[in-house]
Amino acid sequence: MPRSVIKGGTVVTSTEQMLSDVLIDDEKIAALAAPDSHDWEAGADKVIDATGKYVIPGGIDVHTHMELPFGGTKAADTFETGTRAAAWGGTTTIIDFAVQAKEQNLMDGFEAWMGKADGNCAIDYGFHLIVGDVTDQSLKEMDIAFDEGVTSFKMFMAYPGVFYSTDGEIFRAMQKATENGSTIMMHAENGIAIDVLVEQALARGDTDPIYHGLTRPPILEGEATHRAIKLAELAGCPIYIVHMSATEALLELTMARDDGQNAFGETCPQYLFLSLDDLGNGYEGAKFVCSPPMRDRAEEHQEALWKGLATNDLQIVSTDHCPFCWGDHPEFGTQKQLGRDSFASIPNGLPGVENRMELIYHGGVHEGRLGLNRYVEVTSTTPAKMFGLYPQKGTIAVGSDADVVVFDPDEVHTLSAETHHMWVDYSCYEGLEITGKVETVLSRGKTIIEDGAYHGSAGDGRYLRRGTNQYLI
Image (cartoon, rainbow, N blue to C red; front, side):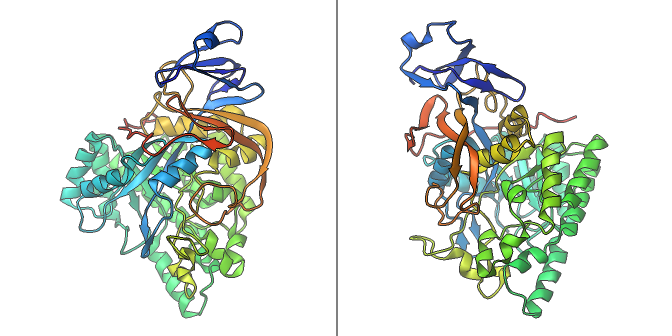
């Protein structure tokens, strides 16, 4: 591995900002030193000039769905295309979701997703496991998965007949998580009530995409979040609420944390930048269908979510990247148009893995909602600590993996499907002008993005065996 020097930049971690050069050797950060205090360049194979730029830890996206089967199709990004796009956007680690289907062993899902990812990823990767069928066998296999470095398990209060688990099944899995030290991740929406609202909407002839949002109201996210947190409190396990979108849910999380419970949460860029109005543009609204949906009174919810990120009531920004194509994709065709006759048939999911780091910088740091250290914390450091990867990942420190991003805080550019690298034919942020751009990306010391070109390859990424949540009280 070449010996590299990043010189002249401002190194930013979750706690520090300092003008410092960075020496990289053998995939690791070997040293940090003040400029002009060393002779590293003389022995370096590569020198990267970061003058006037930020040098930050590579982003960690702990919620992606590459190649996820859904509604008779599957997410358009493969592990190869999706992780390459992530790299373009400054993300150097993903944690994807392996899926246990009904009547399948839990470890069968893990092995299937390991097979999909092996030799294809541009960046390092790990897995959570979706527990889709709670049985005595799958509960035993949670221990086996834990030994393989899977220390978090996702469950669903939504999607009856697909991923949905009853409160009793959820509670049993939470008891197992308490035994082995893992974290339960929860999709918190009341799927039973939602199905009633969907049935009633379709009976009225309300089939447009906007009704996807209207039949999944915030109160049902708040109710499910409350229920999940209370079940976790009873079981004594850590609970992590995924893709939080609404003030009602955030209030439940905040109260639990104020009471000292090991309760955590994430939000996603779509809930910080988009609204129910985006679903209301006729059938074009199908592009924005995801669950939970974007919200009405969006400014109220967005203000609360940004405040939650600033005050640590929310800990992480992930993407829930799960793209489905709109137009005539060469392989997948018109996926989002599968629901032309019914919003209930629109594949749920949005593209976003490439945009997260730049969007959160723009909306957070540039627009004054987050400090620079907090930005690094919610996009890299906390994800690493929450999911057992720190200090290997999530910081710039001697001995850590050399996952490093050189970030230009001043470059103004426009997001568009014409220029993104995700394998999907539209952007949720088409035409949005933002400030702050990823310039250079290193993954374990290898420069994979530089000078507007990709220099990595499939198979550069390695599987990460993860430890346990480092935030437990």
